[in-house]
Length: 537
Ligand code: ADP
Ligand code: XUL
Image (tube, rainbow, N blue to C red):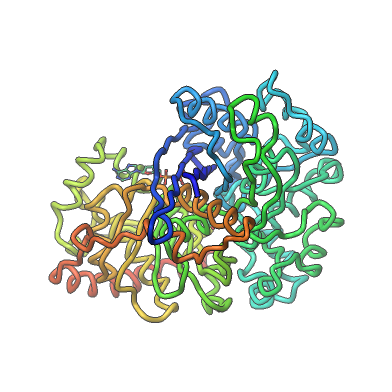
Protein backbone atom coordinates (compact mmCIF):
# COMPACT_ATOMS: atom_id res chain seq x y z
CA UNK A 1 0.00 0.00 0.00
CA UNK A 2 1.44 3.36 -0.99
CA UNK A 3 0.79 6.34 1.22
CA UNK A 4 -2.93 7.18 1.28
CA UNK A 5 -4.63 10.41 2.27
CA UNK A 6 -8.16 10.86 3.65
CA UNK A 7 -9.93 14.18 4.13
CA UNK A 8 -12.44 14.94 6.87
CA UNK A 9 -14.61 18.07 6.57
CA UNK A 10 -16.53 19.35 9.59
CA UNK A 11 -19.27 21.88 8.81
CA UNK A 12 -20.04 23.06 12.34
CA UNK A 13 -21.98 25.97 13.82
CA UNK A 14 -19.19 28.52 13.71
CA UNK A 15 -16.76 27.18 11.13
CA UNK A 16 -15.85 24.72 8.39
CA UNK A 17 -12.71 22.70 9.15
CA UNK A 18 -10.58 20.31 7.14
CA UNK A 19 -8.43 17.51 8.57
CA UNK A 20 -6.19 15.34 6.37
CA UNK A 21 -4.75 12.10 7.68
CA UNK A 22 -1.93 10.11 6.10
CA UNK A 23 -1.97 6.32 6.31
CA UNK A 24 1.25 4.45 5.64
CA UNK A 25 1.93 0.71 5.57
CA UNK A 26 4.42 -0.64 8.13
CA UNK A 27 5.51 -4.00 9.52
CA UNK A 28 2.57 -4.15 11.96
CA UNK A 29 -0.09 -3.06 9.45
CA UNK A 30 -0.28 0.71 9.11
CA UNK A 31 0.33 3.95 10.94
CA UNK A 32 -1.99 6.91 10.70
CA UNK A 33 -1.35 10.57 11.53
CA UNK A 34 -2.83 14.03 10.97
CA UNK A 35 -0.80 15.91 8.35
CA UNK A 36 -2.93 19.01 7.87
CA UNK A 37 -5.66 20.96 9.64
CA UNK A 38 -7.30 24.23 8.73
CA UNK A 39 -10.48 26.09 9.52
CA UNK A 40 -12.66 28.86 8.13
CA UNK A 41 -14.66 30.89 10.62
CA UNK A 42 -18.03 31.92 9.17
CA UNK A 43 -18.40 35.23 11.00
CA UNK A 44 -14.87 36.37 10.14
CA UNK A 45 -15.05 35.39 6.47
CA UNK A 46 -18.66 35.99 5.55
CA UNK A 47 -19.72 39.22 7.26
CA UNK A 48 -22.07 39.88 4.34
CA UNK A 49 -24.47 37.20 5.60
CA UNK A 50 -24.90 39.02 8.94
CA UNK A 51 -24.24 35.98 11.13
CA UNK A 52 -22.97 36.10 14.71
CA UNK A 53 -21.10 32.94 15.70
CA UNK A 54 -22.41 31.39 12.46
CA UNK A 55 -26.09 32.06 13.20
CA UNK A 56 -28.50 34.83 12.15
CA UNK A 57 -30.02 36.97 14.92
CA UNK A 58 -33.42 35.79 16.18
CA UNK A 59 -35.27 38.71 14.58
CA UNK A 60 -38.72 37.76 15.90
CA UNK A 61 -37.48 36.91 19.40
CA UNK A 62 -39.33 33.58 19.39
CA UNK A 63 -36.36 31.24 19.68
CA UNK A 64 -35.74 30.82 15.97
CA UNK A 65 -32.19 30.08 14.79
CA UNK A 66 -31.28 30.07 11.11
CA UNK A 67 -28.09 29.97 9.06
CA UNK A 68 -27.78 30.60 5.32
CA UNK A 69 -26.86 27.39 3.46
CA UNK A 70 -25.15 29.52 0.80
CA UNK A 71 -22.61 30.55 3.46
CA UNK A 72 -21.73 26.88 4.01
CA UNK A 73 -21.42 26.48 0.23
CA UNK A 74 -19.09 29.48 -0.09
CA UNK A 75 -17.00 28.11 2.76
CA UNK A 76 -16.61 24.82 0.90
CA UNK A 77 -15.04 26.55 -2.10
CA UNK A 78 -12.90 28.67 0.19
CA UNK A 79 -11.50 25.74 2.14
CA UNK A 80 -10.51 23.87 -1.04
CA UNK A 81 -8.91 27.08 -2.36
CA UNK A 82 -7.07 27.44 0.96
CA UNK A 83 -5.68 23.91 0.63
CA UNK A 84 -4.64 24.61 -2.97
CA UNK A 85 -2.94 27.88 -1.94
CA UNK A 86 -1.09 26.04 0.84
CA UNK A 87 0.22 23.56 -1.77
CA UNK A 88 -1.60 20.68 -0.14
CA UNK A 89 -1.74 17.97 -2.79
CA UNK A 90 -5.22 16.48 -2.98
CA UNK A 91 -4.17 13.96 -5.64
CA UNK A 92 -3.55 11.25 -3.03
CA UNK A 93 -7.04 11.59 -1.54
CA UNK A 94 -8.75 8.20 -1.51
CA UNK A 95 -11.98 9.28 0.17
CA UNK A 96 -13.66 12.26 1.84
CA UNK A 97 -15.82 11.99 4.96
CA UNK A 98 -18.06 14.76 6.31
CA UNK A 99 -19.24 15.76 9.77
CA UNK A 100 -21.99 18.35 10.20
CA UNK A 101 -23.69 20.22 13.02
CA UNK A 102 -26.69 18.01 13.83
CA UNK A 103 -30.40 18.59 13.12
CA UNK A 104 -29.96 21.59 10.72
CA UNK A 105 -31.79 21.06 7.43
CA UNK A 106 -31.44 22.26 3.83
CA UNK A 107 -34.42 22.37 1.44
CA UNK A 108 -33.74 21.80 -2.26
CA UNK A 109 -36.12 22.25 -5.20
CA UNK A 110 -36.57 20.27 -8.41
CA UNK A 111 -33.59 21.96 -10.15
CA UNK A 112 -31.14 20.73 -7.52
CA UNK A 113 -30.44 17.33 -9.09
CA UNK A 114 -29.48 18.82 -12.42
CA UNK A 115 -27.50 21.68 -10.83
CA UNK A 116 -25.49 19.21 -8.74
CA UNK A 117 -24.89 16.89 -11.71
CA UNK A 118 -23.62 19.72 -13.93
CA UNK A 119 -21.32 21.71 -11.65
CA UNK A 120 -18.79 23.53 -13.80
CA UNK A 121 -15.39 24.75 -12.59
CA UNK A 122 -15.90 27.96 -14.64
CA UNK A 123 -18.20 29.28 -11.89
CA UNK A 124 -18.08 29.03 -8.11
CA UNK A 125 -20.40 26.77 -6.13
CA UNK A 126 -22.54 29.53 -4.59
CA UNK A 127 -23.34 31.03 -8.01
CA UNK A 128 -24.39 27.64 -9.33
CA UNK A 129 -26.44 26.60 -6.29
CA UNK A 130 -28.20 29.97 -5.89
CA UNK A 131 -31.42 28.66 -7.51
CA UNK A 132 -31.37 25.19 -5.98
CA UNK A 133 -33.31 26.02 -2.79
CA UNK A 134 -36.99 25.88 -1.93
CA UNK A 135 -36.22 27.60 1.39
CA UNK A 136 -33.59 30.30 1.62
CA UNK A 137 -32.54 29.66 5.22
CA UNK A 138 -31.76 26.53 7.21
CA UNK A 139 -33.19 26.08 10.70
CA UNK A 140 -30.35 24.83 12.93
CA UNK A 141 -29.90 23.02 16.23
CA UNK A 142 -30.16 26.20 18.34
CA UNK A 143 -33.79 26.71 17.29
CA UNK A 144 -36.32 26.29 20.08
CA UNK A 145 -39.42 27.61 18.28
CA UNK A 146 -41.27 24.35 17.54
CA UNK A 147 -42.88 23.38 20.89
CA UNK A 148 -46.30 23.35 19.21
CA UNK A 149 -45.13 20.99 16.46
CA UNK A 150 -43.42 18.75 19.03
CA UNK A 151 -46.72 18.49 20.94
CA UNK A 152 -48.64 17.69 17.74
CA UNK A 153 -46.25 14.95 16.60
CA UNK A 154 -46.07 13.52 20.14
CA UNK A 155 -49.84 13.30 20.37
CA UNK A 156 -50.19 11.45 17.05
CA UNK A 157 -47.41 9.02 17.99
CA UNK A 158 -48.97 8.19 21.37
CA UNK A 159 -47.02 10.28 23.89
CA UNK A 160 -43.38 11.08 24.72
CA UNK A 161 -42.44 7.53 25.80
CA UNK A 162 -43.75 6.15 22.53
CA UNK A 163 -41.86 8.74 20.42
CA UNK A 164 -38.71 7.85 22.36
CA UNK A 165 -39.32 4.14 21.90
CA UNK A 166 -39.70 4.58 18.11
CA UNK A 167 -37.07 7.23 17.35
CA UNK A 168 -34.60 7.03 20.27
CA UNK A 169 -35.54 10.47 21.63
CA UNK A 170 -38.62 12.30 22.78
CA UNK A 171 -39.65 15.14 20.46
CA UNK A 172 -37.18 18.01 20.76
CA UNK A 173 -37.65 21.48 19.28
CA UNK A 174 -34.35 21.44 17.38
CA UNK A 175 -34.91 17.99 15.85
CA UNK A 176 -35.52 18.06 12.11
CA UNK A 177 -39.00 16.46 12.10
CA UNK A 178 -40.64 19.24 14.18
CA UNK A 179 -38.72 21.80 12.09
CA UNK A 180 -40.06 20.26 8.86
CA UNK A 181 -43.59 20.25 10.26
CA UNK A 182 -43.29 23.96 11.10
CA UNK A 183 -42.13 24.70 7.52
CA UNK A 184 -45.02 22.67 6.08
CA UNK A 185 -47.53 24.55 8.27
CA UNK A 186 -46.10 28.02 7.62
CA UNK A 187 -45.20 27.71 3.93
CA UNK A 188 -47.05 24.80 2.37
CA UNK A 189 -46.13 26.01 -1.15
CA UNK A 190 -42.42 26.05 -0.25
CA UNK A 191 -42.85 22.61 1.29
CA UNK A 192 -44.54 21.27 -1.86
CA UNK A 193 -41.75 22.70 -4.01
CA UNK A 194 -39.19 20.87 -1.91
CA UNK A 195 -37.78 17.88 -3.74
CA UNK A 196 -35.09 16.91 -1.23
CA UNK A 197 -34.60 17.62 2.45
CA UNK A 198 -30.96 17.23 3.46
CA UNK A 199 -29.21 17.55 6.80
CA UNK A 200 -26.07 19.72 6.90
CA UNK A 201 -24.16 16.43 7.02
CA UNK A 202 -25.81 15.13 3.83
CA UNK A 203 -25.88 18.48 1.98
CA UNK A 204 -22.08 18.85 1.96
CA UNK A 205 -21.36 15.32 0.58
CA UNK A 206 -24.14 15.84 -1.98
CA UNK A 207 -22.19 18.79 -3.37
CA UNK A 208 -18.95 16.80 -3.23
CA UNK A 209 -20.53 13.86 -5.09
CA UNK A 210 -22.59 15.98 -7.51
CA UNK A 211 -25.75 14.11 -6.53
CA UNK A 212 -27.98 13.68 -3.49
CA UNK A 213 -26.35 11.49 -0.84
CA UNK A 214 -28.37 9.77 1.89
CA UNK A 215 -28.49 10.54 5.61
CA UNK A 216 -26.67 8.11 7.92
CA UNK A 217 -28.18 6.55 11.10
CA UNK A 218 -25.92 8.74 13.28
CA UNK A 219 -27.51 11.99 12.11
CA UNK A 220 -30.82 10.45 10.95
CA UNK A 221 -31.60 9.63 14.59
CA UNK A 222 -31.60 13.36 15.36
CA UNK A 223 -34.74 13.97 13.31
CA UNK A 224 -37.50 12.17 15.30
CA UNK A 225 -38.17 10.39 12.00
CA UNK A 226 -35.97 7.29 12.01
CA UNK A 227 -36.88 3.96 13.58
CA UNK A 228 -33.95 3.58 15.96
CA UNK A 229 -33.99 -0.22 15.80
CA UNK A 230 -34.35 -0.82 12.06
CA UNK A 231 -32.33 2.33 11.18
CA UNK A 232 -34.85 3.14 8.41
CA UNK A 233 -37.47 5.93 8.20
CA UNK A 234 -40.47 5.20 10.42
CA UNK A 235 -43.66 5.34 8.37
CA UNK A 236 -45.62 6.43 11.48
CA UNK A 237 -43.21 9.25 12.31
CA UNK A 238 -43.16 10.46 8.68
CA UNK A 239 -46.98 10.51 8.61
CA UNK A 240 -47.18 12.35 11.94
CA UNK A 241 -44.81 15.05 10.67
CA UNK A 242 -45.85 16.17 7.17
CA UNK A 243 -47.51 14.75 4.03
CA UNK A 244 -45.40 12.97 1.41
CA UNK A 245 -42.32 13.40 3.57
CA UNK A 246 -40.92 9.97 2.66
CA UNK A 247 -40.61 11.12 -0.97
CA UNK A 248 -38.43 14.05 0.04
CA UNK A 249 -35.94 11.96 2.02
CA UNK A 250 -33.34 9.69 0.47
CA UNK A 251 -33.21 6.27 2.21
CA UNK A 252 -31.17 6.10 5.39
CA UNK A 253 -27.72 5.04 4.17
CA UNK A 254 -25.16 3.07 6.22
CA UNK A 255 -22.37 5.32 7.50
CA UNK A 256 -19.71 3.24 5.76
CA UNK A 257 -21.38 3.02 2.32
CA UNK A 258 -19.56 4.47 -0.68
CA UNK A 259 -21.90 6.86 -2.52
CA UNK A 260 -19.82 7.59 -5.60
CA UNK A 261 -16.74 9.41 -6.85
CA UNK A 262 -16.05 13.08 -6.23
CA UNK A 263 -17.66 15.50 -8.72
CA UNK A 264 -15.50 16.57 -11.62
CA UNK A 265 -15.84 20.15 -10.28
CA UNK A 266 -13.37 19.35 -7.49
CA UNK A 267 -11.10 17.32 -9.79
CA UNK A 268 -10.68 20.11 -12.34
CA UNK A 269 -10.71 23.06 -9.97
CA UNK A 270 -8.74 21.75 -6.99
CA UNK A 271 -6.89 18.72 -8.45
CA UNK A 272 -8.67 16.24 -6.18
CA UNK A 273 -7.92 12.64 -7.30
CA UNK A 274 -10.58 11.64 -9.85
CA UNK A 275 -11.18 8.29 -8.12
CA UNK A 276 -11.65 9.87 -4.66
CA UNK A 277 -14.72 8.29 -3.02
CA UNK A 278 -17.49 10.12 -1.17
CA UNK A 279 -19.30 8.54 1.78
CA UNK A 280 -22.39 9.71 3.67
CA UNK A 281 -21.79 12.40 6.25
CA UNK A 282 -22.70 12.04 9.91
CA UNK A 283 -23.46 14.42 12.79
CA UNK A 284 -20.62 16.20 14.56
CA UNK A 285 -21.26 14.24 17.77
CA UNK A 286 -21.25 10.77 16.14
CA UNK A 287 -18.15 11.94 14.25
CA UNK A 288 -16.46 13.08 17.49
CA UNK A 289 -17.25 9.67 19.01
CA UNK A 290 -15.09 8.12 16.26
CA UNK A 291 -12.46 10.87 16.37
CA UNK A 292 -11.99 10.29 20.11
CA UNK A 293 -11.63 6.55 19.49
CA UNK A 294 -14.82 5.63 21.39
CA UNK A 295 -15.66 2.74 19.08
CA UNK A 296 -16.51 0.29 21.87
CA UNK A 297 -18.74 0.83 24.93
CA UNK A 298 -17.25 1.73 28.32
CA UNK A 299 -15.68 5.15 27.76
CA UNK A 300 -17.26 8.58 27.65
CA UNK A 301 -16.47 11.64 25.57
CA UNK A 302 -17.26 15.29 26.21
CA UNK A 303 -17.16 17.93 23.51
CA UNK A 304 -16.81 21.56 24.59
CA UNK A 305 -17.82 23.17 21.29
CA UNK A 306 -20.57 25.72 20.66
CA UNK A 307 -22.76 23.20 22.48
CA UNK A 308 -21.32 21.06 25.27
CA UNK A 309 -22.14 17.40 24.68
CA UNK A 310 -21.55 14.20 26.62
CA UNK A 311 -21.63 10.92 24.72
CA UNK A 312 -20.67 7.24 24.80
CA UNK A 313 -20.91 4.18 22.56
CA UNK A 314 -23.66 1.68 23.46
CA UNK A 315 -24.41 -1.88 22.35
CA UNK A 316 -28.22 -1.53 22.55
CA UNK A 317 -30.55 1.44 22.14
CA UNK A 318 -31.22 1.97 25.87
CA UNK A 319 -33.21 5.16 26.18
CA UNK A 320 -32.87 7.70 28.99
CA UNK A 321 -35.65 7.18 31.60
CA UNK A 322 -35.67 10.93 32.27
CA UNK A 323 -36.21 11.68 28.56
CA UNK A 324 -33.41 14.27 28.47
CA UNK A 325 -30.80 12.38 26.41
CA UNK A 326 -30.89 10.82 22.96
CA UNK A 327 -29.94 7.55 21.31
CA UNK A 328 -28.25 7.93 17.92
CA UNK A 329 -26.69 5.37 15.58
CA UNK A 330 -22.92 5.12 15.98
CA UNK A 331 -20.97 5.27 12.72
CA UNK A 332 -19.00 2.28 14.05
CA UNK A 333 -22.25 0.26 14.19
CA UNK A 334 -24.56 -0.19 17.19
CA UNK A 335 -25.51 2.98 19.09
CA UNK A 336 -24.42 6.00 21.07
CA UNK A 337 -26.04 8.00 23.85
CA UNK A 338 -25.86 11.78 23.79
CA UNK A 339 -26.80 14.64 26.10
CA UNK A 340 -26.61 18.14 24.59
CA UNK A 341 -26.25 21.40 26.51
CA UNK A 342 -27.05 24.54 24.58
CA UNK A 343 -25.32 26.82 27.09
CA UNK A 344 -21.79 25.64 26.32
CA UNK A 345 -19.02 27.80 24.84
CA UNK A 346 -21.26 30.79 24.21
CA UNK A 347 -22.25 30.86 27.91
CA UNK A 348 -18.56 30.80 28.88
CA UNK A 349 -17.89 33.56 26.35
CA UNK A 350 -20.79 35.57 27.70
CA UNK A 351 -19.44 35.66 31.25
CA UNK A 352 -15.88 36.22 29.98
CA UNK A 353 -17.03 39.22 27.92
CA UNK A 354 -19.21 40.58 30.74
CA UNK A 355 -16.04 41.04 32.78
CA UNK A 356 -13.89 42.07 29.78
CA UNK A 357 -11.54 39.11 30.33
CA UNK A 358 -9.28 37.29 27.85
CA UNK A 359 -9.24 33.46 27.94
CA UNK A 360 -6.00 33.64 29.97
CA UNK A 361 -7.66 35.89 32.53
CA UNK A 362 -10.72 33.64 32.50
CA UNK A 363 -8.46 30.72 33.47
CA UNK A 364 -6.74 32.73 36.21
CA UNK A 365 -10.12 33.74 37.69
CA UNK A 366 -11.22 30.11 37.59
CA UNK A 367 -8.16 29.04 39.59
CA UNK A 368 -8.47 31.86 42.07
CA UNK A 369 -11.65 30.48 43.68
CA UNK A 370 -11.93 27.32 45.81
CA UNK A 371 -13.76 24.26 44.49
CA UNK A 372 -17.44 24.67 45.40
CA UNK A 373 -17.06 28.45 45.08
CA UNK A 374 -18.07 28.95 48.77
CA UNK A 375 -21.70 28.35 47.84
CA UNK A 376 -21.92 30.79 44.89
CA UNK A 377 -24.15 29.16 42.27
CA UNK A 378 -25.28 30.14 38.79
CA UNK A 379 -27.90 28.33 36.74
CA UNK A 380 -26.35 29.30 33.38
CA UNK A 381 -29.43 29.70 31.20
CA UNK A 382 -28.10 32.49 29.01
CA UNK A 383 -30.25 30.79 26.37
CA UNK A 384 -33.06 28.24 26.71
CA UNK A 385 -31.62 24.86 27.75
CA UNK A 386 -32.01 21.34 26.39
CA UNK A 387 -30.74 19.37 29.42
CA UNK A 388 -32.59 19.96 31.67
CA UNK A 389 -35.40 21.34 29.57
CA UNK A 390 -35.62 25.07 30.34
CA UNK A 391 -38.02 26.75 27.90
CA UNK A 392 -37.23 30.35 28.86
CA UNK A 393 -33.80 31.92 29.04
CA UNK A 394 -32.67 33.70 32.21
CA UNK A 395 -29.45 33.33 34.24
CA UNK A 396 -30.19 32.60 37.92
CA UNK A 397 -27.64 33.68 40.54
CA UNK A 398 -27.38 32.59 44.18
CA UNK A 399 -25.02 34.15 46.79
CA UNK A 400 -23.49 36.33 44.10
CA UNK A 401 -24.61 39.81 45.20
CA UNK A 402 -21.70 42.24 44.70
CA UNK A 403 -19.47 39.37 43.54
CA UNK A 404 -16.78 39.88 40.89
CA UNK A 405 -15.37 38.14 37.84
CA UNK A 406 -13.77 35.17 39.64
CA UNK A 407 -16.94 34.16 41.52
CA UNK A 408 -19.05 34.42 38.36
CA UNK A 409 -16.62 32.58 36.07
CA UNK A 410 -16.11 29.75 38.57
CA UNK A 411 -19.88 29.53 39.07
CA UNK A 412 -20.60 29.13 35.34
CA UNK A 413 -17.96 26.44 34.76
CA UNK A 414 -18.85 24.49 37.93
CA UNK A 415 -22.53 24.67 36.93
CA UNK A 416 -21.84 23.34 33.43
CA UNK A 417 -19.70 20.44 34.62
CA UNK A 418 -22.00 19.60 37.53
CA UNK A 419 -25.05 19.61 35.29
CA UNK A 420 -23.33 17.18 32.91
CA UNK A 421 -22.40 14.90 35.82
CA UNK A 422 -25.89 15.06 37.36
CA UNK A 423 -27.78 14.37 34.17
CA UNK A 424 -25.58 11.44 33.17
CA UNK A 425 -26.01 9.61 36.52
CA UNK A 426 -28.71 7.43 34.90
CA UNK A 427 -26.08 5.91 32.60
CA UNK A 428 -24.75 3.93 35.56
CA UNK A 429 -21.12 3.52 36.50
CA UNK A 430 -19.19 6.78 36.88
CA UNK A 431 -16.46 7.21 34.22
CA UNK A 432 -12.80 6.77 35.12
CA UNK A 433 -11.48 8.54 32.04
CA UNK A 434 -13.20 11.24 29.99
CA UNK A 435 -11.98 11.89 26.44
CA UNK A 436 -12.43 15.55 25.51
CA UNK A 437 -12.59 17.64 22.38
CA UNK A 438 -14.00 20.94 21.05
CA UNK A 439 -12.60 24.50 21.07
CA UNK A 440 -12.72 24.90 24.87
CA UNK A 441 -10.85 21.63 25.47
CA UNK A 442 -7.65 23.62 24.86
CA UNK A 443 -8.31 25.27 28.25
CA UNK A 444 -6.59 23.20 30.94
CA UNK A 445 -8.24 25.05 33.84
CA UNK A 446 -11.72 24.20 32.53
CA UNK A 447 -10.60 20.57 32.21
CA UNK A 448 -9.41 20.62 35.84
CA UNK A 449 -12.93 21.54 36.97
CA UNK A 450 -14.26 18.71 34.79
CA UNK A 451 -11.80 16.21 36.34
CA UNK A 452 -12.72 17.36 39.87
CA UNK A 453 -16.50 17.32 39.33
CA UNK A 454 -16.51 13.86 37.70
CA UNK A 455 -13.65 12.51 39.85
CA UNK A 456 -12.17 11.15 36.62
CA UNK A 457 -9.02 11.63 34.57
CA UNK A 458 -9.46 13.84 31.52
CA UNK A 459 -7.60 12.93 28.33
CA UNK A 460 -7.22 15.22 25.35
CA UNK A 461 -5.78 14.77 21.88
CA UNK A 462 -3.37 17.00 19.99
CA UNK A 463 -6.31 18.21 17.89
CA UNK A 464 -9.33 19.93 19.45
CA UNK A 465 -11.44 18.93 16.44
CA UNK A 466 -12.30 15.26 16.93
CA UNK A 467 -15.32 15.77 14.64
CA UNK A 468 -13.09 16.58 11.64
CA UNK A 469 -10.69 13.79 12.55
CA UNK A 470 -13.62 11.37 12.92
CA UNK A 471 -14.75 12.28 9.39
CA UNK A 472 -11.29 11.46 8.00
CA UNK A 473 -11.14 8.19 9.98
CA UNK A 474 -14.58 7.20 8.66
CA UNK A 475 -13.28 7.84 5.14
CA UNK A 476 -10.34 5.51 5.82
CA UNK A 477 -12.62 2.82 7.22
CA UNK A 478 -15.17 3.00 4.37
CA UNK A 479 -12.44 3.03 1.71
CA UNK A 480 -10.80 -0.09 3.15
CA UNK A 481 -14.13 -1.86 3.43
CA UNK A 482 -14.98 -1.06 -0.21
CA UNK A 483 -11.51 -2.19 -1.33
CA UNK A 484 -12.19 -5.62 0.21
CA UNK A 485 -9.52 -4.95 2.85
CA UNK A 486 -11.76 -4.15 5.83
CA UNK A 487 -10.09 -3.00 9.04
CA UNK A 488 -11.31 -3.27 12.61
CA UNK A 489 -12.46 0.07 14.02
CA UNK A 490 -10.04 -0.37 16.91
CA UNK A 491 -7.19 -0.41 14.35
CA UNK A 492 -8.47 2.62 12.46
CA UNK A 493 -8.46 4.77 15.64
CA UNK A 494 -5.46 3.23 17.45
CA UNK A 495 -3.00 6.06 16.72
CA UNK A 496 -5.34 8.74 18.04
CA UNK A 497 -6.47 7.44 21.43
CA UNK A 498 -4.53 9.50 23.99
CA UNK A 499 -2.43 6.98 25.89
CA UNK A 500 0.25 9.07 27.61
CA UNK A 501 -1.13 9.22 31.17
CA UNK A 502 1.28 12.03 32.07
CA UNK A 503 -0.73 14.25 29.70
CA UNK A 504 -4.03 13.54 31.47
CA UNK A 505 -5.60 16.12 33.77
CA UNK A 506 -6.14 14.27 37.07
CA UNK A 507 -8.68 15.02 39.80
CA UNK A 508 -7.45 16.76 42.96
CA UNK A 509 -8.73 14.95 46.03
CA UNK A 510 -9.74 17.93 48.17
CA UNK A 511 -11.57 19.53 45.22
CA UNK A 512 -13.43 16.28 44.57
CA UNK A 513 -14.65 16.28 48.18
CA UNK A 514 -15.83 19.90 48.03
CA UNK A 515 -17.58 19.31 44.71
CA UNK A 516 -19.51 16.30 46.00
CA UNK A 517 -21.25 18.65 48.43
CA UNK A 518 -21.65 21.25 45.70
CA UNK A 519 -23.36 18.69 43.45
CA UNK A 520 -26.11 18.20 46.04
CA UNK A 521 -26.63 21.97 46.48
CA UNK A 522 -26.75 22.37 42.70
CA UNK A 523 -29.21 19.47 42.33
CA UNK A 524 -31.53 21.09 44.89
CA UNK A 525 -31.21 24.58 43.40
CA UNK A 526 -31.86 23.33 39.87
CA UNK A 527 -34.85 21.23 41.00
CA UNK A 528 -36.44 24.15 42.83
CA UNK A 529 -35.95 26.46 39.85
CA UNK A 530 -37.43 23.92 37.42
CA UNK A 531 -40.48 23.55 39.69
CA UNK A 532 -40.79 27.32 39.85
CA UNK A 533 -40.81 27.76 36.06
CA UNK A 534 -43.17 24.82 35.61
CA UNK A 535 -45.62 26.42 38.02
CA UNK A 536 -45.32 29.75 36.16
CA UNK A 537 -46.22 28.24 32.72
P1 ADP B 1 -18.09 24.34 16.86
O1 ADP B 1 -17.38 23.15 16.29
O2 ADP B 1 -19.35 24.00 17.60
O3 ADP B 1 -18.34 25.43 15.84
P2 ADP B 1 -15.61 24.69 18.34
O4 ADP B 1 -15.43 23.31 18.84
O5 ADP B 1 -14.74 25.16 17.23
O6 ADP B 1 -17.13 24.99 17.95
O7 ADP B 1 -15.44 25.65 19.59
C1 ADP B 1 -15.54 27.04 19.45
C2 ADP B 1 -15.54 27.66 20.84
O8 ADP B 1 -14.30 27.37 21.51
C3 ADP B 1 -15.61 29.18 20.82
O9 ADP B 1 -16.96 29.61 20.84
C4 ADP B 1 -14.84 29.57 22.09
O10 ADP B 1 -15.74 29.98 23.12
C5 ADP B 1 -14.18 28.28 22.57
N1 ADP B 1 -12.75 28.49 22.90
C6 ADP B 1 -11.73 28.75 22.08
N2 ADP B 1 -10.58 28.91 22.77
C7 ADP B 1 -10.89 28.77 24.10
C8 ADP B 1 -10.15 28.83 25.34
N3 ADP B 1 -8.85 29.06 25.36
N4 ADP B 1 -10.83 28.61 26.49
C9 ADP B 1 -12.15 28.36 26.48
N5 ADP B 1 -12.88 28.30 25.36
C10 ADP B 1 -12.27 28.50 24.18
C1 XUL C 1 -26.61 17.69 19.33
C2 XUL C 1 -26.70 19.15 19.06
C3 XUL C 1 -25.44 19.95 18.90
C4 XUL C 1 -25.12 20.16 17.43
C5 XUL C 1 -24.08 21.23 17.20
O1 XUL C 1 -27.83 17.09 19.52
O2 XUL C 1 -27.76 19.70 18.91
O3 XUL C 1 -24.38 19.35 19.59
O4 XUL C 1 -24.75 18.95 16.84
O5 XUL C 1 -22.83 20.87 17.51
